[in-house]
Length: 333
Image (cartoon, rainbow, N blue to C red):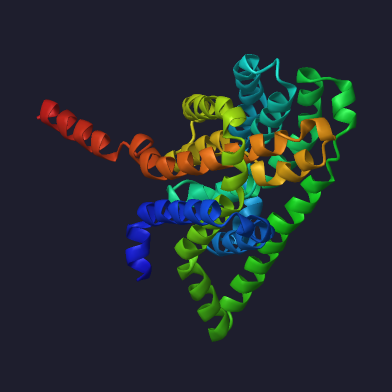
């Protein structure tokens, strides 16, 4: 069953999205309780993902200057320029503008690791980089908001949820995974626990996707007339950043797995973490949280396509290299 689920995982995720959509639209009352379940199920998913990463070698990631440099350039240099240019189309509507800026300027630190893993990317390197991505967005997001919106708006934002989310979604699952790996190396029950959790990766991903969609889709469709304008903007952002991530990572001389990780980081945004920040904004920004949620729904669909497509776009040139060597031997003969 585990092998079958992994082989057909893309279809399983699409099925989960459909189930979540049907449930959220047919029973709007489930939205609120399911919303409280997002962080716990996401934490479990990340715990399962971290279990598959050799945590003892995580410290080596801080020495990977080319990979870290590519991540920083993509997320904190290229992304702000792209976001500024794309948001000129909605600059006159501050509710939409604020929501889009919050979500697109913050690189993801949680489920991007899961998506990267499923696409054969360097998820362990991305995990090592999460503290830097977190610190970077906490320091630079207020600067970008000040430049794009103004000083008074920045003063109204409470950034405490960033630290809370980092503790709940990264530190806690990471510590739990470390303890499980320690037990698995020394006890039979620890090994069984680690194997069982790892086998549950696909079902946990399905549960996460279904819960997110079911909890948010009714609110989005209720305001669809106002929110539809940001959908093409989110799609354009993803397409541009796929190309930008590939260019920057190749220019940095990274291997294929690391290139995929940089591309996923460039595209995936921190919507679940910034949502509490946006919910705490003054009343005149009541539409902004739904702008963030809309990005989540669009992004989930894009991520599923990327899991399938990116390994086919960014792939090792083994066959080409072998063919070139054969041709060289023929010429020498």
